Amino acid sequence: MDTTVSEKPLTGSMASAAKLSLTDADKHDKTRRIQQACHQKHVSVLIELASSTGGLLADDLRRKAWPILLGFAPEDSRPVEQTQANQDHWRTLPRHPDEDQVQLDVDRAFVYYPKDESEQSLETKKAELSDLIVSTLRTHPMLSYFQSYHDVVQVLLLVLGKQQAMAAVPRISLCRLRDYMLPTIAPARRHFELVSAVVKAADPELANHIAQAENIFALSATHSLFAHDIYNYGDIARLYDFLLAHEPVMSIYLFAAVTISRRSELLEMPPDESDMLTFVISKLPQTFDIDARIQDALALFRDHPPQTLPGFVWWRLSQYSVLKTSRHIEPPQSLEEAERFGQKQIEQLQRQELMEKRALLLYKYRKPATSLAAMLMVGAFAVWVRRNGHDKVFWSVVATTYSYLSRPG
Image 1 (spheres, rainbow, N blue to C red):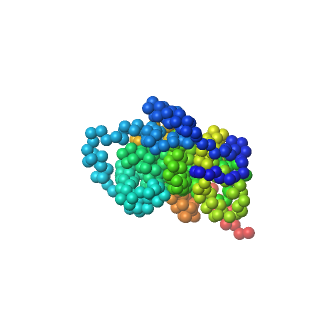
Image 2: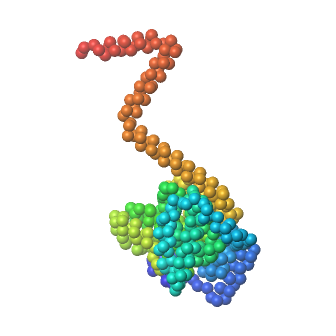
Image 3: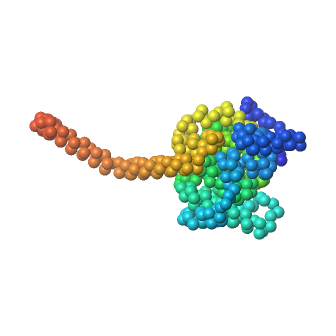
């Protein structure tokens, strides 16, 4: 974005940086390096370039680099001797339950970008956006749609075009956004706990001040990879350069970096006004230095890696969480493997839900259950006594005890 947030300089690894820019010579050299890395499919070089000032610079370069970062080569999405019927096979699949909501969101897509598009062009893009979302949901019916998912797909469509996006959308869904596309929001809540833990690790004073805010403040930004909250096309494309070049948890660190960069603003707010704190933190400033925040996020990740965060929040994540199963960009994970992890996580959620229902039922009927348990224990003991030939002794003791307790005074 074209201005930098005016904030008190932070200490340590979160020190504010002056906004950087590239000269024409720098851009020319970087363009050459990006093209070479794409040609050689050199992922580590692309990661470095995507994370440095200016990111991947332009959409023509992104169309070569993003597919590699997402785990498929650009040529994999090219129709090679395919008929239109084969390309549109998803249309014959059963309708997904969320398609009505998809259409509602598609109808209000492309609000902020692209600019100066004709009505006909926008309608074409909306039809393509709908195809991308519905084809993914029908092909992978274990996924559930969430509002703002269309913002993510919209970015991929505008940068890559429909054909490449057809390969990109399932990959970003299963390998990066899967925890947000499960039947419940429970896995996503663990992500929000991670945001709070990163802030606490890096800035305990700020974390204590905003502790009363609902950590769901990170929902909008993290589950849309910031696409729902950034309204400038060049900015969101540049931000995706960075996010696609790193494991999914990096979006958590980026949100924490933005939050910490606003510390003076947040510290001025009364800590007991939790609703206002939640609202302010959740609304990203529309003027912040993306390159500076990216460097802050990388520093946070380096200084406070996920497994060291306070409260054991990383270890409380499901072993099937996308944050744990997609930790490596290279080699890319297969869609089949990602879907298997998703199915296991859904089964785990179902077991947890069943256990919670049983626990609530036991609590509701705890008195009758206690009486029944006591009766069963007495009955089992009586059977054991009889089988072992101690029944006469047992009943003699019972009779003596009863007689003693029945004496007057």
